[in-house]
Length: 549
Image 1: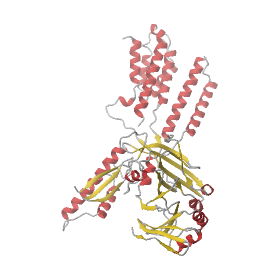
Image 2: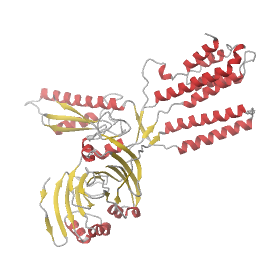
Image 3: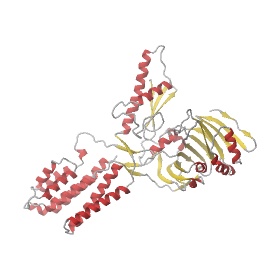
Image 4: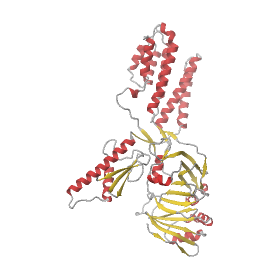
């Protein structure tokens, strides 16, 4: 083997990704976009004749008696939904985050140093400060110890006079190996009670009154909006008077009204988000009612999660994400996962998911959000973390600087101070522009979130069993756990950090874990044969652990 080939093999081995040098597994942190909570969120599913609309909202202000009114075009059926549906959709519809971006800028720096060395160094030429600096840049660019620059500097003396003629082919070979190693490195680094229908007076008809969850609901109709508002006020449904005009419009159009009243146990100004309600009704075209919202808000951020036959669209709303749905576990990761039990039920096998969002002013909500269907066009948003954006910017700038330097060298331009200042200014301005233009978002990072989420919940279930076993041994008569007792144990245990990586924070959101049917959280429920501890994976799929068995 001649010395040129030996040199090529040696440098090629140094260009391999560093993650392959060790005997362990290097696990890069996983980054998730922080969930942005809108003013109103809703799930809408449509099968061509029936719309299912799940609405989640919150109440802000002092008081314990709050009510809201939802207009629908036809007679609805109202039922309760679990609190984790919307949080699950918020998590699963987050954009793809590029956080662990390969440090290609170092490779470009090293490649530039290699090109310089093989283009200028000859056996008859004395070593210069430029050669010394190039070796340091080569070692730094490859991300290895500075002591390696001694080896690179020594290699310069190996090149013989006869091999100088092979310099061009050697440079080309090294460049190809270098680019392949960068590509491979990038691949390795990237990863109720019910009342019967009655009528009251001559203008307001009560179709149904029902206690559902922590809501008292009434389904009403009236051709007179003012009479409807008076009925609501007399019956304890405190609705702002500034919505009277909008209510009158709906009444003239013969819409139905669902009035819901929630009682808060405490007089507080803290925002309250009661469990959502599901409205099911017949309609020729799906709709999200906005006119009442516009009458009560000057500015409102609305997030809609639509399941239907095609891509959904509403004037004034932006399509954040559109994908085909994936019902079965193990399906393509590039489809939208529908694993949560209640979302599965509501979506009703709809083939397409669309996430729509809008920041609406009062004038934007003078008409309702009628959904139209467009041909399917996949859209999956992507963003950078601030770290990822910085690395990507450095990669782009080093590539640009390398191209400019190569052009100057090819043209025989002298690297004098004015030229260096111009190149520096170009690099800095490009760096700033690229960083500002890249889409960025705040993220929460964690390592192996799926695995540690599973381990944590199995550990928590085991701790609940241990607490019951210890209590049962000393209790007389025999102790029988109740749902309330189990929940208290789970809440107390979930506030403890059992291990540096098994913390009380939800790995998918960075927020404290809680009892809710959403990713990273858990639910305690009574089953036919005892009690179940249910935790939820990133896609909303539930995992059941039988307690005390």
